[in-house]
Length: 139
Ligand code: DQA
Image (tube, rainbow, N blue to C red; front, side, top):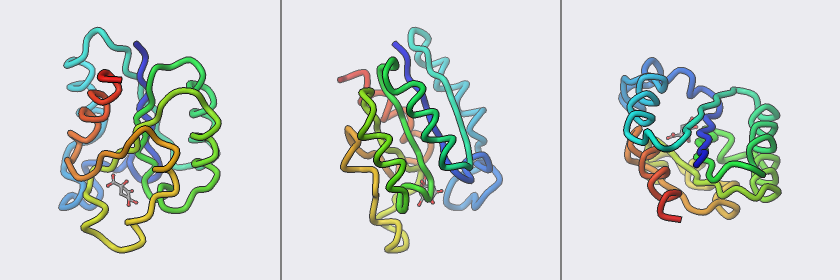
């Protein structure tokens, strides 16, 4: 089973950026734990701050992988192009957020992507990614 994690803008700064919201663990550290927890699953990781590169990655894996876990960061709230990319591929996408976006500013309450996703997981810190993987395993 192949699962692709895709992180969008500013998520390369996890562990450094706004620690009171996003915690103090870098994603690479967390990824190792996640991969160790699921030794039989191929979990690959991609991060970009560039909208078009996120779309290219969705196209690249979206016809062959079994699942995509996507935290599109702020593009979640703005990107029709990423929403269209998710609609255009076959692989199910789970939208993920580290923070509970519904507890935060109103502009974070809207997701352009959610309607094209299998589901949304938000507010469980980095554990949101594990919950998303679990949801893909449950199919
Ligand atoms: C985020 C929430 C977004 O609103 C924000 O722009 C992010 C991170 C989260 O994981 O909680 O960059 O997606």
